[in-house]
Image (cartoon, rainbow, N blue to C red; front, side, top):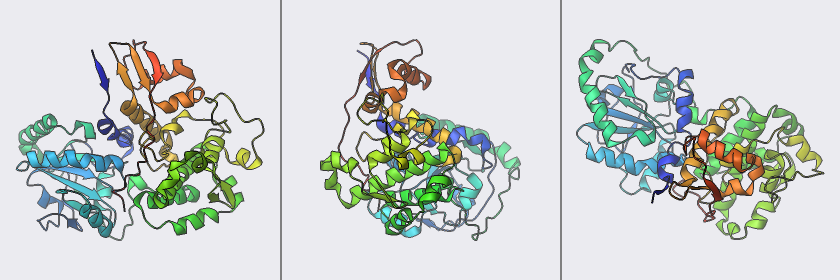
Length: 433
């Protein structure tokens, strides 16, 4: 019998990663076949060498992995990357790059078992400006002579591919050396305050606030100032400052995920009674009190009744809800909202200008991690949230079309649908500060 469950670890690695590829043409950073020049390394920690330039790292095949302590797929990838480094210790060098403060990175490293990889502290933004990762995780394979050999997904970081890249490096050595000046890299001034593209600030100040709050809540930083700022937004600014659905979705998804993390870190026991946890109006934004249900079902689902499978809309929603809610329900929000449980989608940082692609990536990643397809029985187990809100997805027929469009099952398949159980175990990724 063929019965496989697509691995969560394998496919959560692509939760945001695929966005890197979808935006690649819009980036000005290094692409495959470009030649990287030399540029300074401001600081490298967890490393015996005192390398101060990128050139000094290139005595081996270099795997540049853009990393964040807040990034669940990045952290989940560490054991695999470490195993690859140990196996190919004489042939490759895996280097993590983060623009987070050195103190935060050192604190994170201390809490990990067998953390062996060096970390470039890229606070000046040198690596980020040159490579321009559109999202995290983002990996670039660079040969000894500086040629970019590949920009792989995390699932493509295999022994087979590393052997292939080593062969490519050796075969291209002479040609690459002849073209070393093809793309000289400028020295990036440390005064250039470059923001990580994965955490790039929105031009909309309300969305920017929600991003900063989400980041602080996810990484365990002090959030009191952000709570005050959210509370003190003027209601008129909140009502008029989010001008379209992409801005509304980005703001409210970030806010929802931030409040979930903040409340459960402060009081994990609150999750023992989930009814009040989601219903209590303990969230103050713009002088108004909201519950998590208000945000999810009232604002983001456009006034849907929570337990109606998505088929019933509130007949008389309140004025605040009518003024703040989206104009059109987007089923993909179900793959972006993190409720704190193991079966929840991973957290990302949402930005209006790339929201459509981000939600597509989140949808594909979550489905690939949760769908159970049994070819022998001709059955497919879909995520529980699709069953809870089935009208949001257009019913079972459209659900089946969705998993086919995402390449999860063959286009010719016609399995019987059932919905998987939901794992409510609390899961806050407590490796964060």
